[in-house]
Length: 592
Image (cartoon, rainbow, N blue to C red; front, side, top):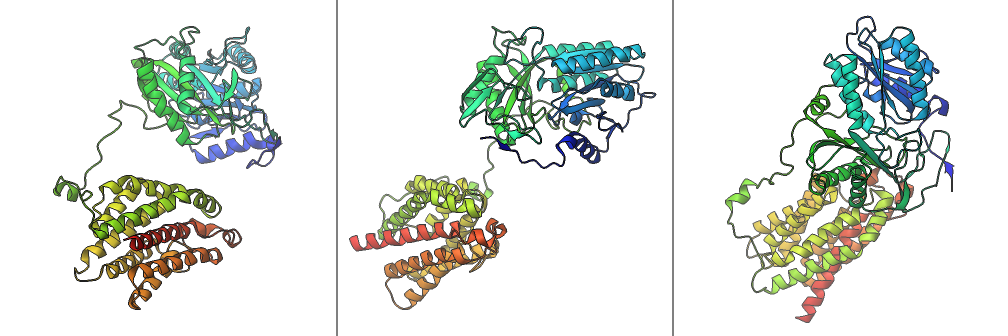
């Protein structure tokens, strides 16, 4: 069902001009011509036609592809960008205004994406500028590898155009003549191929969102204006998508780009506007080894980010350009264009290096602490408690995530699950006859896999309990040692986490449990009974958080009304594993 898209805009008709105003306020090296709304031209603030002694590089087209093209205006790249309305070619008068504003005696190169409107408007502007005495050359970029050329239209211009901008801009900055700059740009345009994959179509400002692509579908070769692509298919893992796109671009049957085994190439992974950087980086990480191992190519540079978008479209395109030393030199040349990626030039060192070993560990015996050949009664009790606690956390993973999605970031269950799974995997190596070392090893398992606040709090918890257990006197009863360890662990979590009772955190399960445990042990109850009663207090404490206003963690930013619908996930996780451990100890005690 179609619905009005949410946009952070004012009047949809003012999106482009207001974007340009914000861009120029942000980057002091940019200016725009005072011709709104008809003339929308972004240009370098340091260039005037009378004094500029380099070839001017101008590109442009319909807006909605930001940062292309205005985000690539700067020394070493574009001299000016001509902005049309959303997805509409800029008018001839606007293009002419840009040419007149920046073109000096060295002339001007127009880099034009291969769309009919752009070719016609830039073409007419070029002819008019020539009649006025300007030296003009034009390079048309058509790097699309998804669709075969159709009639006289040819292949569409896509994100590979940005690489052509960089080559041309660097050549111009180096002082080359107009003919030589145009020749390098033309050669670069013939060396690059691009194909895109979309998970959604884009939504124009003030328009309704299209539902053309249904759930679980993707479109191969979708155009950057939302025009239909080559095929609609079921969504696949990014590994599969990347493989398909690379094969399409590098196909020897279509021969879109003159790239063969042994060639050197540069890779660009371009987000289409609505794709998180993490997903783009995943695509980059998969594309490089595929190019190297499956296609026999040397990947000299990788550019990952959003370069030529399609408003809010979800998806990405892949561009591959054949490279030689001259192309690499142009790509690595300095530029002040604000959206060209920095830190990409140069050769790659090895991607991975070994994890440093803490000095304290290197001084220890090479023999790790391991599971004893035979468990003593304490070790047996510890084993069943740990296993029961970890399994309980795994069982409530989905509930924890559901609660956390309402009051936090939705990953409490997933995070706790990783820790519990690691503990179950590692328990076979725990020195279970030694309580202190076992707690320390639990902390190590947690530290290895649990991220975020939960991971560090549980690691602090285990480290403090370990320190207390190590410091306990040999003569003290084991139940008293555990109570002291729990008290020390709670104190450490409170100290470093900043929370205490009533803050709607995991401490609202732990603190009541400790109070009852100490009370019952002091009253002379046997340790198993005291443990069981304290677990009931943990459950009650966790459930009571539903009535608390959060004062720590992400929940503190959530309204009381929303908090009142669910308990604190962290407290419920504690109650779950604490209760499960107590029940397991009781069952083991009764069975022995």
